Length: 345
Image (cartoon, rainbow, N blue to C red):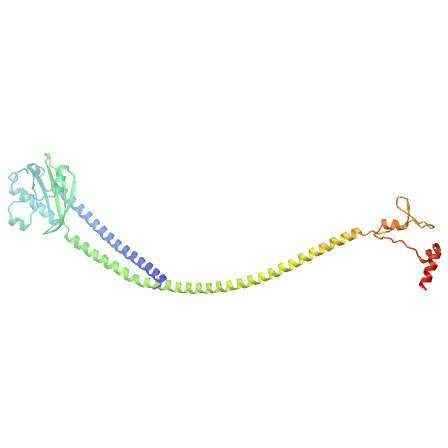
């Protein structure tokens, strides 16, 4: 398994686990909520039953229930019948009252089943030896307490309400409700919830496979696209390299041409400077030049008469070398001229 596939598998597994945990958590919370609603309903019924007991007995009954002989058997039987009828009509296990004498607790007006009636004739002022500590606390401090317990006969929910007789005697009005069936219902609900959770998990499997397949196909397309991008990238890099090479060659050529041009411009600039210097040294003669018709002297701009050769030298780059032409030589130096002519012949 590749690293990428392992990563995808772990992601899918995590998603599935989160979904399963969510379903199980919801199932548990839903089951607990249902149980809480049922228990609240039972507690409400228990409380109503416990508070109703005093209306089924004589008003001063608990003022008189102070010893085993203080209540007649006939009154006990009447109370028993009333409480049994209420118990059977409302589905309670037991309803009863508890009194205290010398630190011990006794049943004052209990419901009695047929089996219990056969075991014992009178249940009035029967000791309640295993009374719950919560009931004792309620007797001392007042208020209401709920107790849940289990024994060989089942699981029960009980309530104890602290009441006060007209004579100021404190007693407990109690009611018990068997909740064994509730545990069975809760177990059935839990199983139903588990089956429901499994059902939803199972029907989600096709969606998981579908999502996995879609994700896999997407990855394949993405992989192909990435490979194409890599190919284009490599080709682009080659094209960029070739283009860069061409640009570099063109740049080198331009640099060479620029260098040649710079050198040419430099040479031209030097030649220009030379030409400018030469032009600066060139002197020209122009305009009307006054010259003597006899001695051939010329007049300058200041009015002085100068030898023509001197004037020309001052106004040009010409340099004169003096000599004699044949005519002047014959005229001025005839002897020398004649000798020279003889030598030539």
